Image 1 (tube, rainbow, N blue to C red):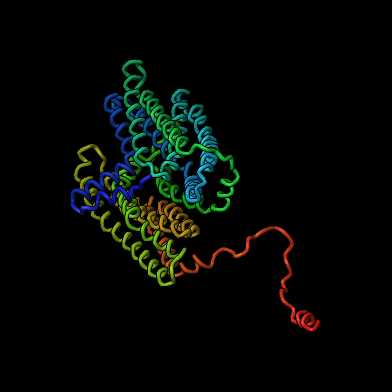
Image 2 (cartoon, rainbow, N blue to C red):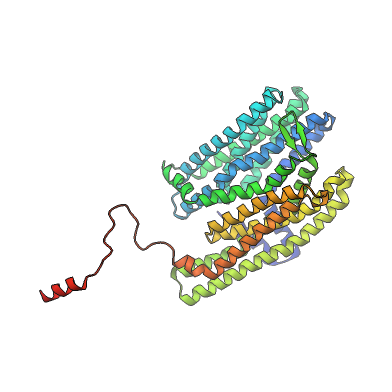
Length: 487
């Protein structure tokens, strides 16, 4: 299957402004379309179903339900994503396609168990303490499980480079959800809030079923080797820690501000901080193009240099290896610098547009005062994540763990400190955490550059390890050898 890089290379061949715009649009459609499709669907449902006619409590309850569904589905999937992606990549490289289904089934079971164990107590509290009706609680729980299935299956489709299929499935699911909400409200006369949440839940399940069907269609055979998947979790536990810490770090500053005086508590269950959460959302959208640019440039430029170095290590001369290594790290530096330059221009333009136009759409002045610092924070966060990806390329799992943990911990402590400052500096904790993580990742990449030869050629063992009696340490005795020669 052709990768994004191959198709983008063809698009960018002419090197004109038009082709760059087409390439940017294509990469956008292949990467962040799902997120925008979901947001657009919720906005359209709210417009046509007159969501604004609900009371403030009802509107906020729906908003918090959707917010919690997405945040905690992403958090519960994060411990599994990196390890399963690693296992699947290795299996595909070794052409053991029959081992992918066991990986999928076992990972799905583990993910659903973790998600259910965390979701059920929350839903029981929401019903018995918050007095929310059973139907609404159960619908929200089903939507949460559906999104867990969606996020989990996306791992396999992403490894298979089926980005367009992912975007197509999201579009189909959200179109279905939109028309289902109209049917439930206008024909069956359901409530506005219930119609929107139930329709969104069915749309997410439709996306999950389509993704599962494609996974089973791609990978037909089942070797029933489940133990090898579990061994990967033991062997690559750093991937679990790194990915979970990174995802937690993206939201831990929100959790800190959910404990402040300006928080909103709904039905004794949901907690949010609307101005801060909205500013966070805007800041992420302002910098989301960095993900597109990074995927595009890595697929097009760096991956080829990395492949050349790998091939030189396998069968090249020492001089060829040194040349390929130098070219690879020059390309790495070039990609990071280009990413900063291009994204700085895009962020500046988007920030200016938001500051000028958002007040006309009802965004509060408090949200816009919090927004600038968070924009800087997420700019550094996505740059830091680019460095983490490069650490994965060089199998520096300890470096990835240190980067993610330092990012998460400093963000947490910095947010506690920033909560006592003025609104303009509320996002300082994220800036501090992201800069700390970026610094750690940069130091690790420089260390790898200096010690890459030792990392490549001096790890591993010449003899296969095994269980048994340790052989004697003495391998040669001069006296015995002399007696043998005299005999």
